[in-house]
Length: 153
Image (cartoon, rainbow, N blue to C red; front, side):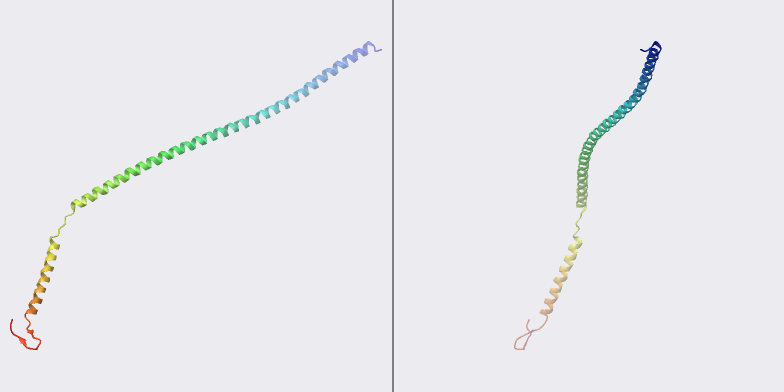
């Protein structure tokens, strides 16, 4: 049926088709590999970013809790130190006030001599005034109720 030339031509054509088809297939496979790799890298990048964000969020939460605890401990320590300082300052202030009051008490000298002299002078003046009034009354003539003067003393 077919002669040798046509068989050779047919075999050559088939071979040529196979070569062209396989190179086209390689070209499509190259494009598929490129898109497959791009997709894989994109997926891996997204997964990596998500893992990094999750790790950062977890670590941030851990460090935030650590910071809160350290702040709480620092505040408690500061409160204790302030309370101790306040107690010490109160004790020092009270001691200073007591020492000052003791010094004032020890330095107080009550000098009543001037006051005693004033009181004595006033009493003597009152006594003298009373004596003068009594003498004035005694030196007046006594009048009897009938109107006669009593000359006896």
